[in-house]
Length: 329
Image (cartoon, rainbow, N blue to C red):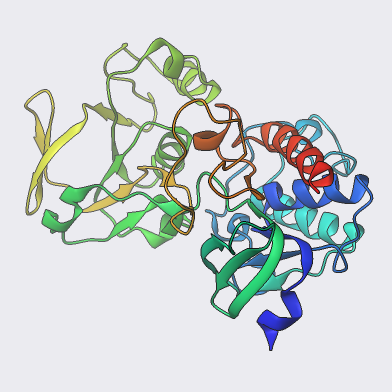
């Protein structure tokens, strides 16, 4: 029954995060009406966007004024860095302002084209849906990426992906190894450093990484060499990249090793695009799947520009895709 109610819309948007809402905003600006012409589906429980699941102290890496869906300013001081809860609330307010009624708990499973016509067949967890256009806006960082050596790891404490980390009291006392030198790894290391003995394992620090604001902040807080950054008062130790694991022992690229009590894998995410057909060969237009006309992507660098995963980049994608959709026969 649910799938039947979704069918025969002009557009189905898959994903109710910032990319999906940016697409909805662009479509509405182009004259299409929510629910009548397009609808959003999302696999999460009602209102449970990924922002709501991040660690409690997390803040955005861009100022509020740059963290918006086009046409919907962020309330309050535009120069502040919003918390993850503020971002979740903001996206809910955008959803309401657009008049979008997201169909939650519905997962996209696959897509095919019916014959040579313009009808697409979208398989979902609620059943089969027919539409003319499908936009994959499920995000570039949707599925936790876990290293293969995780299966060999056996420590007395806990092993968590950064997506499961919430606050310091969640981690038992003892040495904590954090694997991954991106923003999540470094910020979690900084937060845990006041209560735990923290080692941060990263690849060799490039000039690009070293210029990130969080690295600069760590440097200002204490003496730090190029290869072994440390926080003076709390002593976050830098280690080389993990190369192998033997039970409770983690080996690093420089030959060193450690026996951590707990491990946090800040090893990033991969996109939730397994339901899409195989990638297009090089040279195809951005956002457009040539094998399936009417299938588009928004906010996913793999199919677009390198900055497509950012809020601003997703907005640019959405505007382009909306023009494609409105221009299709």
